[in-house]
Amino acid sequence: MKFRVQLVIEGDNEKPDVVEEIGLFERGQLRAEDLGLTLAEAKGLLRSLQQAVVTEQTAEFAEQQTRCPSCGARRPRKGQHDVVFRTAFGKLNLQSPRYYCCSCTPANVKSVSPLADLLTERTAPELVYLESKFAGLMSYGLTVGILSEVLPLGAAISTTGVRRHVQTIADRIEGELGEEQFSFINTCQLDLDKLPEPGPPLTVGLDGGFVHARDEKHRQAGSFEIIVGKSVVEGGGAKCLAFVNREDAKPKRRLFEVMKAQGLQANQQLTFLSDGGETVRDLQMYLSPESEHWLDWFHITMRLTVMGQYVKGLATDLASVVKTPVQADGDEPDETIIDAADVAHRLERLKWNLWHGNVRRALQIIDLLEEDLDIDGAPFENGRKLHKAIQEFGHYIAVNRAFIPNYGDRYRHGEAISTAFVESAVNQVVSKRMVKQQQMRWTQQGAHLLLQIRTQALNGDLRGTFCRWYPGMKRDSGTQDANAAAA
Ligand SMILES: [Zn+2]
Image 1 (tube, rainbow, N blue to C red):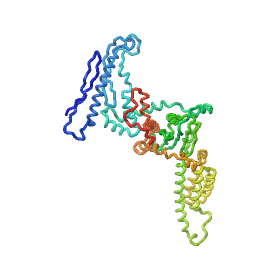
Image 2: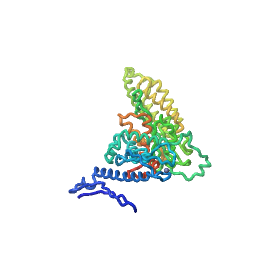
Image 3: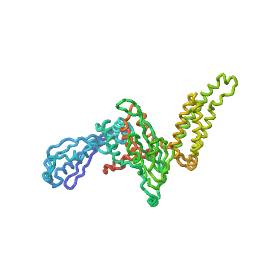
Image 4: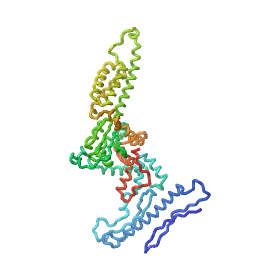
């Protein structure tokens, strides 16, 4: 069986229809692998179709351009040159005619190339969209590989090109972000009362993660902090955001815009949960009049768990001391010696008090523990570690004391107490592309820009952004533009 694929270019009253040959393929005895189109045939057909359509479109455009746009007089042609235009269906060489400028309007140039002037970007927005989306989620090499495998790209795509496009798109997205403000609250109670009923409560979790840095001057690998946030509407979708802490001049605006995109209005209930780090403590302030701010319970328990490990270590340290001759003689143990079980018990009470939001009591327990460990813990390695940890924990609790609620109460009422829901976003945003690929070291600026593409892709917003820039692009690309951050 033979199949012939033709393209019919419809004519009008003056021009007849034109039929063009697009492809031909044959089939013999039916087998699963050649039922329907093979990938190679599909790519070949798309490529030929693209070439035929584009040739026709540019020919019509060139025809229109033969006349001066101002007076309609015919412009003499001054030859032509090739314009390379990269599309999702192949790299095309377009003939771009050059015309002498008409004398009706004074001009600085003698001739123009309308097609070359129209296609300044030289890459179809649709292809740039695909490159950006995939490069936001995987390496440049994989992006080139996967797109070339499914699309008739030929030489239309390269890692260098993808890198350049991603940079351009990220710059453009960044350029659209409004000015930073100290406060985003600009409503008074009177205005608040006039607002319509707000949407369901919004919960925002903020957390930090580290990636390897590329220090080009010293070739020393350090690391830098990435802040990741996830904003969840009760019973609705989620959006994430991310930025490189030391690179971002507008973190507050960035967070504000994410919440605004979720429909946040000034009278809406808003809960922030954060790890208590300095950056995120400031970031969440003055964004909404109805916001509350809590320290993440998960980060408290992590620190307590580490201290619990030191107590276990301390018990081992102490056990080796007990076997000294003094003990063997039956003397009373030295009363200044520390009791690991007692320390463990005090840590438990500390946790219990924090769980119930009793910060005053928690700080007292910390103070006493710190005092005891300072002297009694000093002879033991784990005692010294524990002393240092409890000291740091005391500082952590003290600076975050305004953000410590009664976790027990919140928990019983089904309210969020932890940023655990941000963990998946942190993993998506930071780990896969940036941490696990050890061979890839990032500059802070490069990482920051890539994060902007990545979060747009994860939030399912990248397509919408392109459609806004290029209104001719269709919103539905036929791909699953699901809100991955909600998963
Ligand atoms: Zn003219």
